[in-house]
Length: 276
Image 1 (tube, helix red, strand yellow):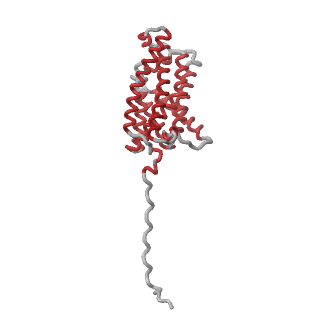
Image 2: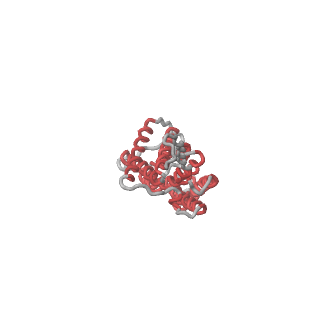
Image 3: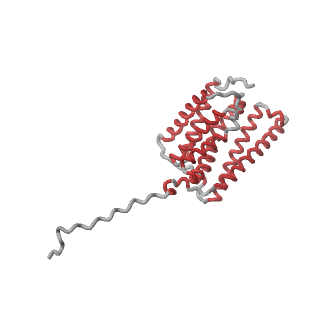
């Protein structure tokens, strides 16, 4: 016997609950690092003090080894260029050691992975990142030729002869991309982006990257602005891919093509323009 009423309205269906919105930490897992603003502040102090101390120590050592008065190395000599490049190389190693100590103190996770060096798809991707760096260098080189420059830039004194350029090429290709990407995109960016959001984090990190090179480009404000743009692009690549390895390859391609331009412009590092 059926007691149901065939014409009775069906009870309304309850609306399905909305899909839960992922927490920001889940969306940006690569920003969940173990260090904080205080660690960035201490690193800034370390960077300034250690770079000055190392430069003085290397200059004093060069003065004693080559029997050149310390004051004589204040001009644009090859010895001064070598001192600056050696000091920068030693500082780079010291900076990585400092970051390693900080990261290992904060977490027991592997150092390189903790600081953002994560894997990414292989295949053609590494070549694409390197090529992207070359395209970036080409664009910046064109833009740089359009920017007026009324004074000789300090960094131009390092391109006075073959030996200085070879040392600078070694630093710019083998050392600088690795160290700068680890510092800016691996150590600084996650803390800044976690606090202010990814877009602001990309902008601030790019500005800091450009200001790092301000002393080398002092007087060339347009060139400093272009390097800020380079820093923003590199940080965007880091944010977009979630790994420092990608921005490193872009940086490597960028520096590599710029040095290739230099080799071509100097006929194989044989002819350098005179400096005042």
